[in-house]
Image 1 (cartoon, rainbow, N blue to C red):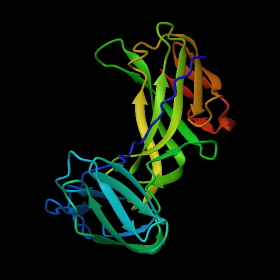
Image 2 (cartoon, one colour):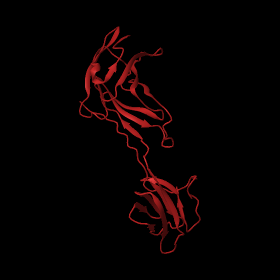
Image 3 (cartoon, rainbow, N blue to C red):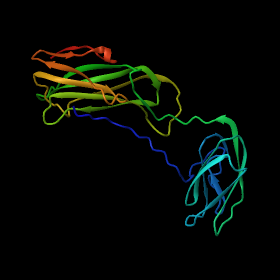
Image 4 (cartoon, helix red, strand yellow):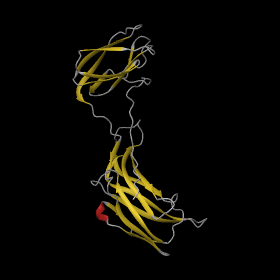
Length: 258
């Protein structure tokens, strides 16, 4: 069976220009000085800096005391994090500019990076609620569904999944439950939890639900080698799902009237 797995990649920039105001940073430093996103950080928390005005020549960064930092550079920018609490003096220079030093304070608390994606696995369970939809304006009739998780996730996350019906055969239905992904990189704080829900349909792949027996596949994003297989029987009066709920994916109801 052809696999279609939707992978989400959350990409973080290693180097950035500090352009927005931070409460404890110096984002708007004058030319020849260091702009920094934060002057107070936690252990292992990334901090962004740049030497203002040094756009075209390589910059050398000096950190004291040394040996407790990891720094990555690109042109006049740097990304730094520290492995030990304390005060660190930083300066930068190139052939034209030597900056004044700044002091970054690292507090004795370990940074926990934001979580952007949580893959589904068998520790969760999914409820798949099918619906039969018939258009009032045409002969179109298709399968729709609402899906929900058993576990609760932060309310700034949403359900991700992929659908597939092979073309031109249209003899199979496929859904893969990928995971929970953050809705916006601008909102990483978890302010509450709830189950995840989503609603969609197969109208794009199968605009006319004809009588017959269709294979029905479903799986979890982490379980890439196993898709659970059942079938969907379509008669003149009913849609019947033949499915084992012990897979962790529950289809309910299993019989729909047409």
